[in-house]
Amino acid sequence: MAEAADKSETQAPARREVPPPDPPGYFEGESLTRRRVFTVAAQGLGGVAGLAIVLPAVGFALAPIFHRGKERWEAVGPPSDFTEDTYRPVVFTIVPGIGDAGKTTAYVRRSSKQLGEKPGEFIALSTRCAHLGCPVRFVQAAGNFICPCHGGVYDFEGKVIGGPPVRPLDRFQTRVSADGKQIELGPRYSVTSQLEPVRARDPAEFTGGIWEYLYPPRPSTFPPPSN
Amino acid sequence: MRLPIPASLRKPGKPGQNGGGNGPAPANLKDPQTGTETAPGRSAADVAKDTGADVVGWVDQRTAATGFLTGMLYRKVPKGTNWFYTLGSATLFAFVVQAVTGVFLAMYYTPSPTQAYGSVAHINNDVFLGELVHGMHKWGASVMIILIFVHMARTFFFGAYKYPRELNWVIGVVLLILTLVMGLTGYLLPFDQRSFWATIVANNITGSGPVVGPYLADFLRGGPEIGAITLSRFYALHMLLIPGAIIALIGAHLYLVVKLGTTAPPWLRGEDPKTARPVVPVEAGANGAAPGNGAARGP
Image 1 (spheres, rainbow over the protein chains, first blue to last red):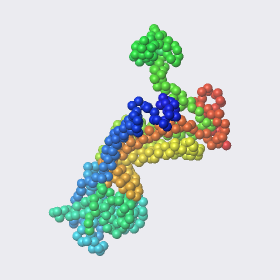
Image 2 (cartoon, chains in turn yellow, brown):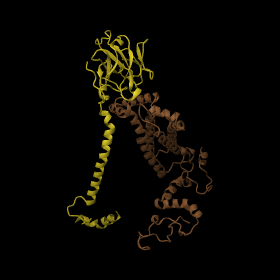
Image 3 (cartoon, rainbow over the protein chains, first blue to last red):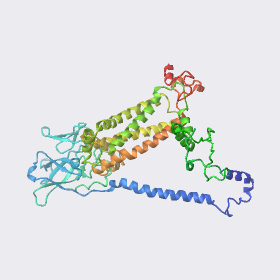
Image 4 (cartoon, one colour):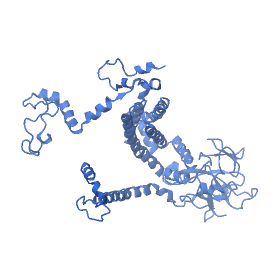
């Protein structure tokens, strides 16, 4: 470095007329020094090598965001178990292979004519509170769902009637098994305040209207049932 | 008196001296620092006595570590430096406790949803001193967070975040955030009811951020629901990624502390800076001050 500085100092006055023939290997009209070429090439190669390591690692870590698991349906009991006017809690698995941690509770009933629901269907409400995900409990005497954590209250249909929750309780898709002997619960979906089905959202996320864009649906969730 | 260093390890002579740099070192090689000659025929006791110093000297000659250590340990600190200035070291000590106990807990812990709770129970109930090590890690985490905030308060109220130390404040804040992330990721690992539901709540708070929140929550969980990946993810973050970042940033934090020096307490600001004294008193009692005395000079 010191050498180069010396040279440029001594030859500075002459530079205006003729470019100095320096460093060795210089040719006239050269726009890029040899040193510069190697510097850029080495840094470029280093960058490519770095990306070759970092990009797969990042993709590896981010992959679950874009991965949707297999659709699961699980039988929870014969249709005769469920009535129109009250809920029956059922425990079933939503994440297989991890024991009790993968199980959740749903409250299931038949669709009610009084509430204007399509007859002959089954309604399965998730116990996951729409505030921050604590498990809610159906209180028979009040006919409400109550969350123990921060006092969220939902009515019989799962609509918010008190506390901090931002939307009604999530639901699970339901169907009657092919032989008609069992009720099966499927993927989770969320609902708007008017109980229109939308893709499953995490708790604390609003649904409907502009919120559908502020809390975009995630690729890891299933499409809502169409009705 | 020095340990006879094997010829292969000796500093080679300079080219032209005693016939070339690659040849065996001359028998009368003089130590460049003390000038003493290696004496042949020393008693075994003499050799043993000097071994420690010789090894240290051998390392020092090749690393110049003493120069670095002297500069760091005997750097000037302002008059009035008091016990409040030890909070940073206390936090560092708390981190070291977390790192050491964490490594030993990892020897018995299994980050699998079906086995995690059992392995923690095994640590607590069966492993020798397991409850103690787990307890140190669990309670030490709280101690570390408390110490960080007290250290931060000291820095704030002593005005030690001002020019030229703003960058160190920023690094400190990042360290605080990383430590809180350690608390978050570590909380899930025992995989009991409290861990599980606390993590669900924390994840849903993450998800409540608009636009990116839902994706961030999916990233943390490794999917739409808490599952097997969540636990191993939190475990990897907790024991590899975040500690690595914390160690690197602690290095930068300490470098800036040594490079910029510490501030005098606000009640002594403006006094003659020449009265600054080294961290370790060079001559005991030379200036009549022991560490901590300065605090007594407060208003």
